[in-house]
Image (cartoon, rainbow, N blue to C red; front, side, top):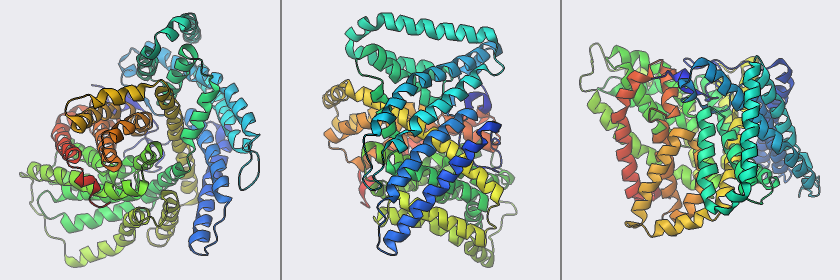
Length: 628
């Protein structure tokens, strides 16, 4: 079995969380990219400042500023494209290297050059359509500022051009000349064969879907091409060789997928996770729960699960959650006789459980992609997480029946009170976020800016604050992560659009409606699909790709949107933590410094417990809808 570092190579949110224990150090950027980083950091600060100004103006002075959303939207697309370029420079785009890692060293180096040249080919082909798209947008003026929309759309060709330069530089830097020549020849030969076969391919209709949108994407994924570009290359080949649709349309779909105003909260919640770690707010929550429950049998397991539940409600990031909780609890758990593989299993599945706790970035993206109420998702997410928390806690209690309690004493009430006093400001934050969004007081984007301001002030006053250098590093890392996430969403949106245009979704509706068992059978199919996609693709691309196809089918069968969303997210997160492919499992092993081989044997009972919870959630809609 390969190690965690061999299995995944990703901008796994760990590198962006500066200073986290047990995770990879942040990647060094090229010197000439420093100005780009500075601009991206300023854009992020500007977006937060604009949104805060809008919130204060609207809710305090009842004077909405109509142009703020437009300026924020323009800045957001520029942030996304510059961040995506920074991720290329830092080699931080999410990609799967499980299969490439099995190759001999020389072949692996060749695959690395080939993947970067494939990325360069995609970007090179998309550069002209992106430029033409920006020109087309110049004929449209914005509603509030009355300026050409090309000011916003110019981010696309600018970002693509910068990524293209960086991809070529990375492909050629220190490369074996023979590898480069063979890679170029191979790409040219395959392109030529597809061009020659294009008339025949157009004649086979929707059979091109498994060839290009499944086969090609899977091949690129196994080669180690970053996931965003796997989707992009598959969609580009599909449109170019099997349809008459111009590539120009793909740019519009990418723009639409990565620049929704709802997604503005994504980089802000990512930054919130960084602040949570840097200020020690998450650690304060962990210490309070440990003082409250640490003396009971399985108490530290309960503390770990409860900490993930509460900390997730602040950060919205699985990696931030795990990296905050593990260093604080693992030493004491080891002292009590907990085995490291068991601790990793509980950590990984606990993080999967907590994914539905607001402010989950996955729920925000799902709401945007499927047109589902984010307030409803946030409200339901708490109840669903409680169901999963309960099944994991029952298993943890049974597993801890032989736990050593020697020397363990109840913490004095005075110590508990002191820990609560320290943790109280941090404990307020998840409930503030859930209440504000769930009750419709403010949008997720508005709440994210308020939460960042709250965390910065509380962190400065009560938890020691954040140094200027570290804050700048967090801004840069947040921009890079956000750009890579949004690039995946844009490419997945283009691929999902291509799928729906073939009529595949309508055919799927008809096929599913004819299945025996009705909606329960469809739920079973959904669980299988999203567990597999969660293993391979991670959460966000799987949702953006499949939501436009699966949700119409669910609605046609009378399944409530919120209920279906909870099943989708839970299944996807179980897949994410399921070995031997699940990326989240390896991140947990990396954070806890435990061999994946050992942890793999320990995690299966916990995966089984989550499956029991998932089946309950799927079969009983009331769990998802009780508080709506």
